[in-house]
Length: 148
View 1 (tube, helix red, strand yellow):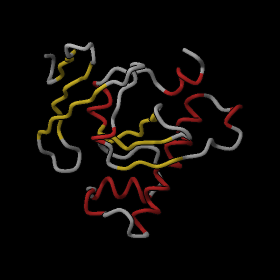
View 2 (cartoon, rainbow, N blue to C red):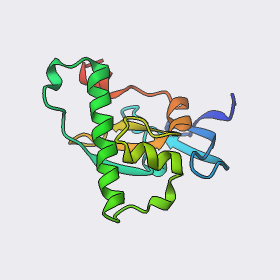
View 3 (cartoon, rainbow, N blue to C red):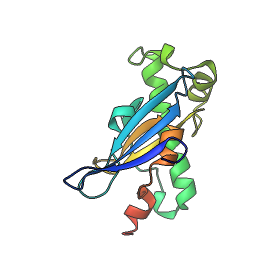
View 4 (cartoon, rainbow, N blue to C red):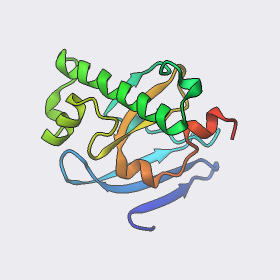
């Protein structure tokens, strides 16, 4: 196990990553078990703080990968902002800094990252703890969309 990360494989060849991480909201040490599906894609469902469906940004075909990702993450944050402001999501599950990032429509929310859920269609974005996401090696949406 390296820095609180352990890759495990069961008797059937199913792979998962166990991660020790600091919860970005509570600051407490937490544990996560992130399995992979049969195609090798990581499943973050159990640690997703929020899930939303987005549409491709207008003119995305002409955007760089970085610009498209930023636009999609901002769109996901704005959806979360609307959900909080309408009472569908409890604001108390976020810190003051995270709420500031959300209310500002930032593409990044402190302690979290937006993950493109490749198992879903249409595009599904999951807000997951950054420390978990960075430790779980997986093919990203940009690579998948280019056939890599």
